[in-house]
Amino acid sequence: MRAIVTVIGKDQVGIIAAVCALLSEKNVNVLDISQTVLQEYFTMIMLVDVSAATVPFARLREELAAAGQERGLDIRIQREDIFDAMHRI
Image 1: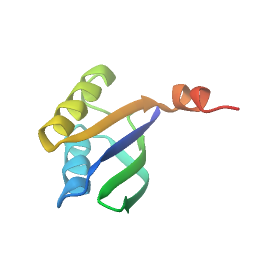
Image 2: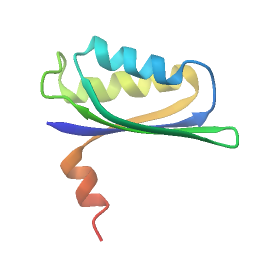
Image 3: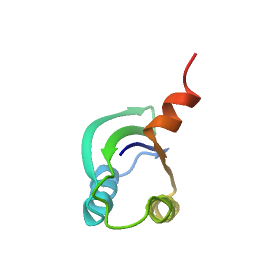
Image 4: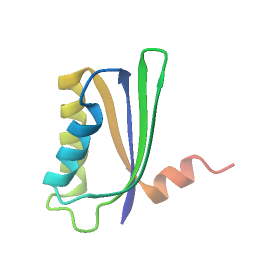
């Protein structure tokens, strides 16, 4: 199953590394990544494969959110099918 990870917050050193390290620890594969800095705000969207994850999806969501709070970031994950349904015109 694929999912979308979004990260938003004040730019700081190590955001990509921290998110990717957490995903790697849970055996989540990054398929695609796009990031930019808009003035002082960092934004990133990732397409990930969670089919081989070592934790349930709900726990992964909680751990990403907690990691984001520690860094002052908003980190969210959604299943790709739900993300697509929400953004369909």
